Length: 255
Image 1 (cartoon, one colour):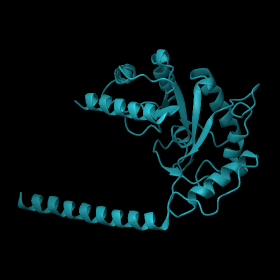
Image 2 (cartoon, rainbow, N blue to C red):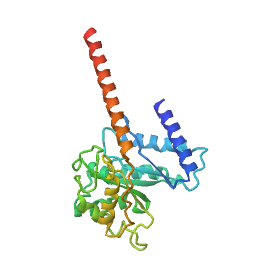
Image 3 (cartoon, rainbow, N blue to C red):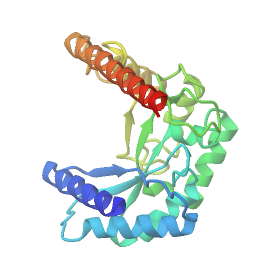
């Protein structure tokens, strides 16, 4: 039942993405539960194929995102992501790599040698040509911690210098001869205060060594009004959780 609902939900996402004219739809592979990894990968491939039936994808490309390795999540190893993409070759599927997830999964992109090793492994397993999008995030979690917790650029365990090496790496740059022109680098960093998003974008442009567009000083995804609304929502959620916990405790006492 859960798998059927997941397939339907993903098909709905595909329809929305096609309607929007999107180039890519990024999806996490999911968890294997008690299944062995090979069986889980086969299920993931089959489920995505089922979701795409009767959906004309057009220019839309499905991208499999690597995971941090929490619990039984599939896709923390590059070989697992590569196996899924191979299974979806007829759909032209590709890959989205998340820097925080790579680091948490044990790929040391924070050091110069570790980055070179990781890029070589990506090329050997997935193929750099198949990586269309990068989610660029620092990590609250140490190397190999297997927990998905994003941090502002330069404030986490990966460090700012590492992002400079990533953004300026010849194999990841825009050079037609050595790099990957047309690739997207997208931030998923925390927005706790208005302007945090703008700060992280500006930081990446600085680390890239390229003069970026002029910063719009007033732009932020988190306005003061939205911040107040979010705070009220969190307060209400905490109140509800506290009331639920009390009911459970009272029930245990009566039991």
